[in-house]
Amino acid sequence: MKRLRWTLSIAIGLATLTASHTALTDPAADQQKEDEAAIRRLIANWDQGWKVFDPELTTRGYASDADWTNAFGISRKGQADIHKFLADLYKNPGIRSRQSTPSTTTIRFIRPDIAAASSYRQTVGQKSASGAEYPTRKTHDLRVLVRDKAGWSIVSHLIMDEKETRP
Image (cartoon, rainbow, N blue to C red; front, side):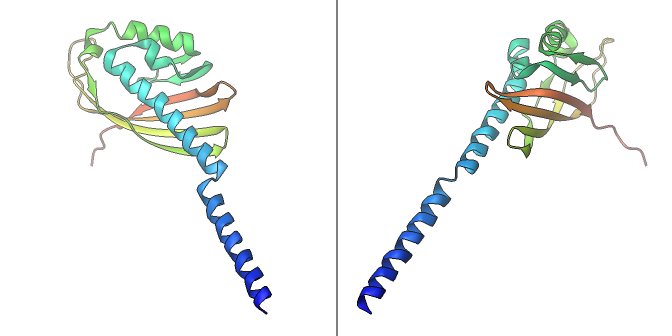
């Protein structure tokens, strides 16, 4: 009987230790945390690139064949084309007068190698070509990201502004 209790105690102890160790070192959960951090870095690069008007930093996370549409309906295809468009846009004084809040972002993993990131930010001080200041822009971004051997990249990015609703 003593031997049975001793054996049972050891078995229960090992099972408990194994279960707690597994919970602490879940590889899938660890990978998802790393992936989420990598995606957040790409979005932080976007925010910082816009803050300092650096097209290289802004477009660093885009795939070579990415689809991109801004809040004004302008579309570009591929990282190089997006980079060129933003480099030209950043020269515009009406753009350079703007300031945005950092993006608040939620990330949903569709599969381990595909994610959707939804972000929100507000922008003030942006001016139109005629010099009129836009009202505060409340902007939403939807990015689809894919992970391959090189890491995460944005394959599709849709930007839209909230429109004022009228009663």
